[in-house]
Amino acid sequence: MKTYIAKDKDVKRSFFVADADGKVLGRLATKVATVLSGKHKAIYTPNVDTGDYVIVVNADKVHLTGKKRSQKIYQSYSGYPSGLKETDFDTFQKRKPKEVVRLAVKNMLPKSKLGKKMLKKLKLYTASEKPILPKSAKEIAA
Image (cartoon, rainbow, N blue to C red; front, top):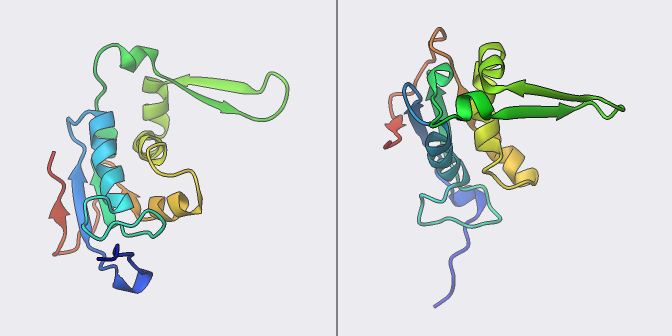
């Protein structure tokens, strides 16, 4: 018996919807990353993008547990001396509410061209934005 290896033409993509309202950031991000990478399918192949599209609504209403809301720091470095910028979670979420979820999911995907391709299938919306959801979209079990 030979091992099945999926091809790009064999992959049937579908849409999943995740509501982030009241959900814990890390637990939501793991489920979204699993669907984006295709690990929920029987035809999963590590070197082929077998994942589905994921639409996350209410991305600005995500929660953190414990003291992470005050202790979590987002860092960016410009490349120049003393160019390190640090931002705490509350400030970062107020300024870029969708970026919080996107970064959490991005760090759970492969750090390669394939990971970048998977991340393009993630669509994020805040509570004020109204996405057009496909009729065949399935809910991600939380």
